[in-house]
Length: 265
Image (cartoon, rainbow, N blue to C red; front, side, top):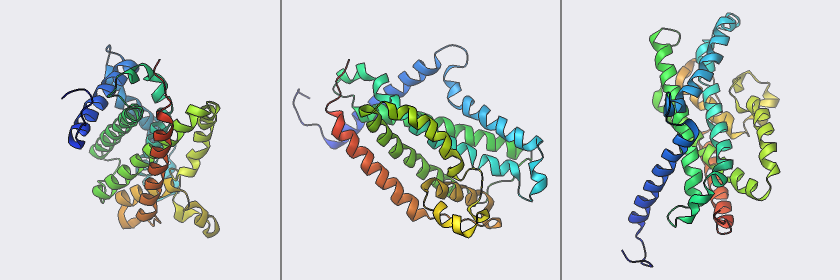
């Protein structure tokens, strides 16, 4: 291929795949290093955090005030919330951390964001699977009622994280102070994510407003997949898909608009 030739769509996707793979490897080495357990921290870190939360609820005997398995309730809420929160937050610093790589014409601004989000989602996914397998094996929780429904909700929330991350990254590039504000706002959003309650337990007046928050639909969907018909949930798959598409459209439009003005350093 000569310089200036048009690249086919298939060839472009292959090149982008290679770029993202290289960025993933660079991110892993930069963040976790080559010594000790290295890249294993990718999922060990979220795994340990989830395990601490589970143990805390287990030994506080929180299941005594409810017939619901509190350990199952915890791992079907907290890890997903941390997944979309961490993935979207990590996207903020993606460009500044890889600014020098933008000298290469095949490395795009979007690639740096995608690699970070993929890495966070992958780590959270491995941690979620491992801890569920361990807890099922030792008999603390039951086998999920509908694993495919859980996988669908996890995937939709990963797309949500990507869309939110794109928007945050674009905004912070123009207004750096927003990055600091988001760090605090992300903690405020934790109780609003649906990780610590069922919508069914809320007063009917509050329930209507709670269902306007996309993250709650993801949590409700994930728990419905685990507990099945033994719990009442109010998720709307359509609402979550539309929310994801809107965020992606806005995020990609914002990234496309400002990426041309990003100068490598």
